[in-house]
Length: 565
Image (cartoon, rainbow, N blue to C red; front, side, top):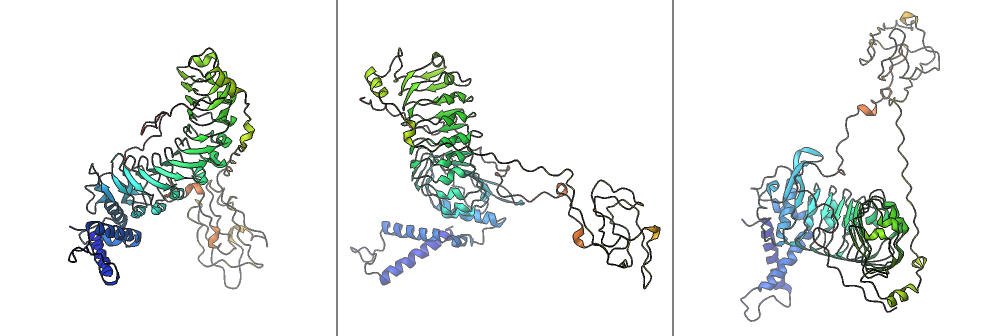
């Protein structure tokens, strides 16, 4: 049955044709045959324009579910139906028929769509994940996907999606993982990802994004950033080291300038950093020695100069070190080749003049095309002599100095026992105030016998039974943590309001302090938590274990030109 979307599109097409016929000076007729209406190409063009108009009218998308045969279990499933049907209409090719069963109101039964209890209302279901990885699907992402407000996982890597990332993705406040890798997305960096408060995993690699990268990206609390193999042209900002990522891959772009010294501030979280195949031109900052947890450090295929810092020998977790295809010089520090976990050290195609014997004992190393004496496949003596005659001044690059990040102060310790604040009961006015008739026992939470207070005779206030004097004028009643009257004994350990004084009016409602924090009910679910555990989506792609697993990096570029020094 033709969906209402197609009916609306057809009506819009007829209206547009009517307007052209009545007002246009160039009617859309085939001039060779006046009885023939639109050509196929003209009809497709108008339909495309109307679909764009319909897609921009985001709020009107609800008209697609006016079919009375569609019954939805809750409004969120209804919104998901609108979004997924709009996406299905935007798919031009689905060779594996992954979306073939995207029919009907039961969106939780759609292939590659995963539902779970809503985070804020576990009694209802909602769409929590979509995984169309490796589907080879061609199309674009419609704005209606912004209706999937409970979405935590969105995986579409290895397809042929093109266009830009929808601006209405900003509504996906729970989105935890966004994988758009290995597609044909284009345009500037999708700034909408900066508006996703729950995002932890961002993968934009192998697309056609271009231009700069917002510095704000490195202030977001992300765990993984993959933006390699695009067309970004950018100089890393000074706040680069603010990023708390464990993995960051910027390879195969056109990043240039300095490698920021601020990366030393990433020591607590960073495990892998890959900056290969860019245009960085500076000396390596000594602060890389602070990266004690880094296992992979790759800055190959850049224009780095100067020595390999001695501080690299402090990277005790390092397993893979690649500085090949640069213009580094000097002697390789012995401490680097003696790192306990180092498995592969590649420093070919540089101008190193010395290497300790320990480097030759590594499981894998590559020292070709340097200026190392008595080693095979080195640069010519003339090349090495010419390069060495020009000393390198690292200060000439004017890279920003290292500014360490101060640790956050520890939170204050809570007071022992969480006692409530003292409760002050106002003193009775001079002359006393008669107790109200019917004053009965103390609050039931106090395990003490009730104190019976007789109604006062008319015209006066008698002394309280038991000889307990009235409180002196201006003296407040004791706080709740003090002992009870002698007839009751000491108060129990749980702080409770004191019994109402015999000659005082009942305390105001505000006297009864709320229970201490530890007895409060748990707070309602917060939307910014990680994705609901009930999602049965396949596990997200693990950060790449060096070398890249999927897709592979570009083949090594040829050797840099021989400089005629």
